[in-house]
Image (cartoon, rainbow, N blue to C red; front, side, top):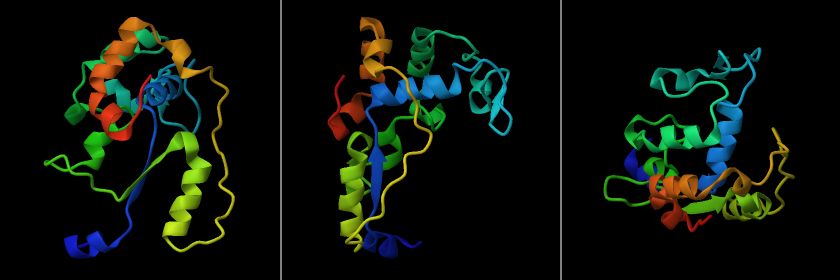
Length: 162
């Protein structure tokens, strides 16, 4: 799509609290007991994480956070790269017109649908729902601070806090 045409589109994204997003990443990509048929895991972890040499099955959440914090956005896997890194240009300008928050997905979906001309949005299905505990239960003071520093721009840009 050419730049002029791109500017005419309504561009949106759905963001997630970095603290909650990192817990979800850990639970889905690291905390595995073994390979799962049809999924991208090897030796109990997500294959995309193998090339870092820092991630391993059964690692603690604290170890996971320390590893993630040590990897720059430029080298980070999409599952833990800063959301702002993907949504801003070199001048730190947003590349989207609207930022929806996952925490309010149903209301946000209605707003997005109305913006693009869908007056009666369909019901939004909830797939891959988990029963994990609150993300706040995963953190101690050290991991909260590491995530605050690692995702500082996301926290500010999208209005999130612990």
